Length: 314
Image (cartoon, helix red, strand yellow):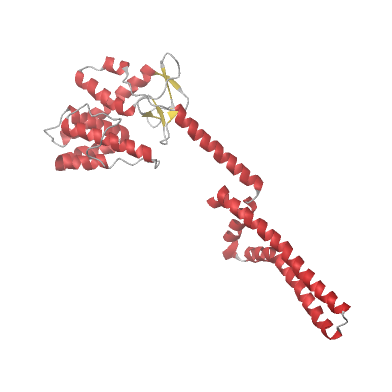
């Protein structure tokens, strides 16, 4: 039934309706007109032997004209009387009823508003990629600072609500979630679009969430009895979990324990497609996974993000 609300389809159907309406009126008029003309000519020429034939022809044309005019009504009655055609009848009735200038205009206006809203959304959201001074100040050592900075560089943060940059704004960035600060979504923090929350509160929540994820990963590594794990692998795994979900962190630890970097790369490759189908989001995810894997496999924290030439994920 979706196409019954598609103004492109309805516009074409409206034209077909107009043509059929014209034909429904014109054809009967022509049939009756030509029949009347022939009948009149017979009377004027006093052709008595053909008068009966012309009367029959005129009657036939009048009946034909009436039937053509009534065809839509007859079809509708047949459909309504037959259970098997009830759904089809409803669909046809709905589509035909929607195929009018007024409703088509409403659909076009709604589509225009939707496109303008999407355009405005893309204008109002511009992720910033500067690291939080609050987070770096509260990092207890250099390793933690590198961990927080790496993930922040990939997440970026939402805009501020004020000129003094003391409150983050919750925004819809187009991926199906409301985001505030460094990739914190409404799935883990109760926030709605337009909300303004103190930056220190959000940044502390970000740190707490990262620390919690780190603890979970370290426990999984210990349980898997992996002996060559290091801080870089932990950071890369946290970044993957933070972006794709905790189950991916578990898969990464298990795959690395089973088959080393080859197994790890397969897990990074498994989270590269945007859930909303947006190609630009997908490309961004591939670039992020590529940088995370480089950190995981080489320990290089200077992987970069923008303008990065992907090495491992095509």
